[in-house]
Image (cartoon, rainbow, N blue to C red; front, top):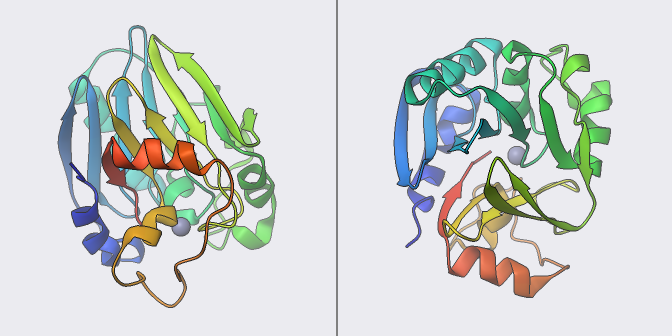
Length: 214
Ligand SMILES: [Zn+2]
């Protein structure tokens, strides 16, 4: 089942007006949250804490995302995993609590450190990635198994696909435009992927796929 492609149709929201937040369950304590300003976000409630995937585009929308998470659980948010560095996925971090473990691909971190990739001029110095992924890593956070997969070239040079093999869910950015009939826009042409294509196949074919567009 591919959940996320419908979400791609909501690309227009990425740069636009805030829309109401809506929480969508993926089962097994996993959710994707649309609305606010910016991309969709993922939420996984683990044994002891919450893992959030991407942070929306503005501090207001980041706060709105946290408010929705707080309605789902009283467990603390401990980790953020970033699909990539585009502002509509990271600038909402500015309203997140400090001291979180923030996981990203190493090029994503470099881009977040570079003022030119921060057109909204949001101060993210306290929210730079604290744990770096280069190619592929398997890890368990709060009892939940994750496979973090990096492919290049893809949407940016610092993308991660976040695959939950037990839940059969993958959270991805526009890297999956490879599978769309039409590119999202001229800025996101379909590009060949290199890297561990077997892992990519595993993540995208077996999973309910939630795209976090833009
Ligand atoms: Zn993007």
